[in-house]
Length: 152
Image 1 (tube, one colour):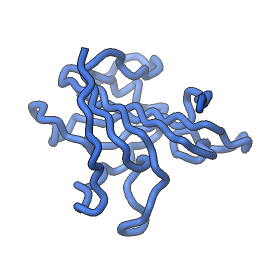
Image 2: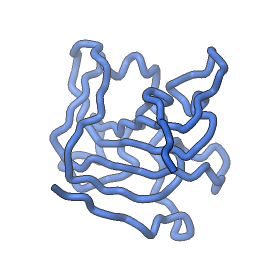
Image 3: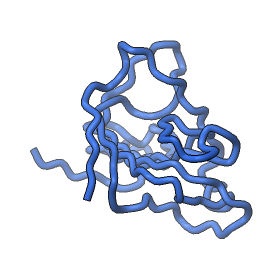
Image 4: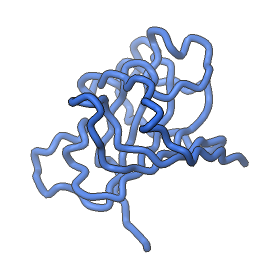
């Protein structure tokens, strides 16, 4: 099946990292996890908020994600997910913390760019309004079992 995904369905970030990878200081202040979500169909509602998942109408959903250190100041240039490898890929659910404990979220395919040297400025984050809280470590019954490392 070929699906045409549209860029910018949702672009948001978590304060702290949902998916830690062992970078120095990654679990402390000054780190964020950037999520760009693609959906097969967008909402036709012109007032949907692209900083949430409101504009993502139907799946399949794909999440491009990476962790970055926040630098002070900067210029409000668009945030572009870094390309290249290595990547960690897995099936899971769409982003954002649960609003109801243990809620089921729509399924999503994740592609997480691994690396400890990515940076994003405070000015780049400002248009994204506010961070979502980082998700806690998931319970065993909610863990993905298909983690794959993609290398060059």
